[in-house]
Amino acid sequence: MNWKFLAAAAALCLVATGLAAQPPVLIFPQVASGSGIDIEILLSNPATTENRGTLSFRDQTGNPLSLRIDGSLEDSVSFSIPAGGLLKITTEGDGELRSGYATVHSEAPESKLAGTLVFNLNGMEVSVPGAAPGGRAHITAEIDEDVDTAVALANPGDDPIDVILRLIDESGDLVEQKVVDLEPGQRDALFVSEIFSNAGDFSRGTVHAVSAQHFGMLGLRQRQSGSLVAMGSSPEVLGAILQPFGTVTVDPGFDLNGIGKNIDSPGFWEGPDPEKTLLFVSAKSNELVEVWEFPFVDNELPALESGFGEGRVNGVAIDEQTSLLYVSQGQPTSSVYVYSLPDLSFVREFDFPEEVETLGNEPNLTIFRDRESGETLVYVTADEIVYVFRASTGQMTDSFRPEGPGSFETIVADNFYQRFYIPDENDQRGIYVYEPSGEPHLRCIGSKECTNNFGSETFQDDGEGILLYTCPSSGSVDDGTGFVVVSDQRNSRTDFEFFDRADWRHLGTLRINGVNNTDGVASTQRAMPGYPAGLFIAVDNDKTTVGVGWDVIFDATGLSCN
Image 1 (cartoon, rainbow, N blue to C red):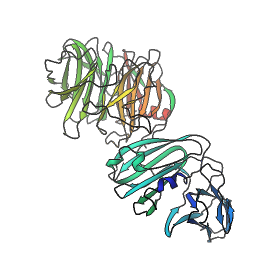
Image 2: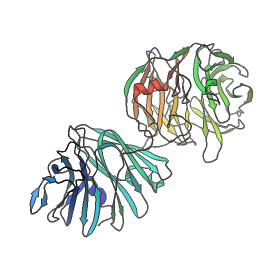
Image 3: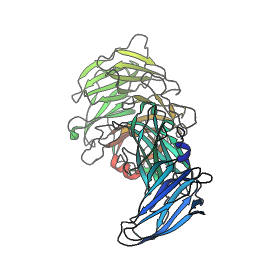
Image 4: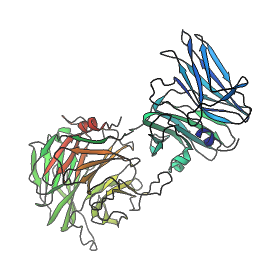
């Protein structure tokens, strides 16, 4: 048997049931008979009553497939298996190779049939267990110089489906996520090394799959020696699988009108006590930062005004690990100020070298933890440039000019993936993704050209505020799943665009009644009284700050980290 024979065979063989009224009780994801290959199908009935039904063979397109059984070509076999009994059906391996799948339908209302298919490949036997229909599955996978694992997927239904595939390594970390589009009746099969561009860093682990519709999944491991092993699937999957939700609208939970004029960027400090959570909102026109304490409504504290020079107070970023607040101010001062939390004592001002003449009108910033060096860095935007500073000293270490966006204001770090997201502000080009060095972080989608851009067809106005929601929902750990939210700053109403952080799919659009022309957004995933899943915050038309509980948003969108 040739090395990597499997993909061709598996491409012909996988099936799952759609949402039919009477789905099969068992599926044999692969059948092949002819050219010296024959199969045995074993059906057992552990019930206390007789089980009648039909075993049917189908080709790649779902049409009847005739296999030679007892000297004649048959595309189905009717059966009656007594209580506790066993049925064995054997095909004859002469003639041309015929491939497809098999389904078992039972007349019993609650069938307990179990089954196994055994391939006889030139004297070598490979068993494949029958599978039940489902929309979630995972298989084990292994790759090295001697072995690879094929993943076969099928959509036997009448509608196109998306199957989300997630590659998880043996430590439980997400390596990569891809989406496979399957047309009605389509079957697709590839090796793990072909599906995932990052599979070169993977040796063993699991492949998880999920879809809103039922699908079929089969894994087969093959060594260069030709040995084959069927990798049985389980209906359990790891991590959040996020489904598109269209466009939804919710009502604001509260609306804060504080001392600030022309407000821009919000941010949370969680601290040790949920009921002492602080919300900060920058104000560009009167050069201060609003300070609100939980429960926020009617609880505005004295504003932060000390230390600022002349220019727009624009960006805020909070480092929860060190309890520090970073505030960026535009020209002519062009600086970053650091304050301790919660007392808001001044700590330091960043040390800008002489060659940095200005940060522009609306600089923003994000906190990044460099996994390689162990350092905490602050990335500061300045219209078309990003400056990098050591958080511990405020000294500049690097700068880069990102390729792609014409101009930009906001930036957010993804510490799990060690990359950054920057929305294009003025030209509706979507979101660009960069490595810590400023090089584009490229993602290759199928046969399409590799890109570091997503959402280019989504925005109708300026891409402004951006936040990262990580899963699990508690926010205490990060498994690599979750979503990115970017505000599309429309004057009539703001569209908050949601994207899957793992594969960059557009998940949907959130609207909040009465909210328009939004600059900044912020999130806390900490549970607080009245907000069991935390809070989403958005600036409304430069004047007020609107809050909505994440539980309300999840109910409306159907999103979940579970």
